[in-house]
Length: 198
Image (cartoon, rainbow, N blue to C red):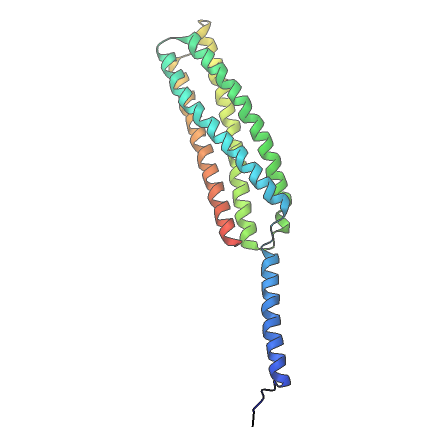
């Protein structure tokens, strides 16, 4: 005599509820981590722009050291030429900052579509750090313009002190360090975002 397994209505209901519940859980979890396409694109573009700003600021930091030495050696014409070149690089950094701010705006607008509060908070942290980077870049830009003005005074033989040039250069270097730091923090926040949405 063969025994046949005949599932009871209770067993069938249990399996339906169990597997149906599991499937629903997976579906909800997957939709929870679904990141808006606009956010993904802006994040990628913004990261490239921020990296360009950091790269240019690194070049500037090295160039500032050379300008400081030229100023101390009273080679004002060379120093002025170098600062003018820096002002051009500075213009490129400003353009990147404007573009970055647009991408950050797009990211911010799509935040509400990220359903996970933890992921949303991490994305906001990254955005805030990139905004802080832009603010420090504005301060950096002011420093470059002041340095250019100070070296012009040297060049035409008007007042202006080497000490003042050193002070301005030190301030600019502090802004460069802050720019790098805020970019690092933004990158770390996005790395945590990626881990939270896996």
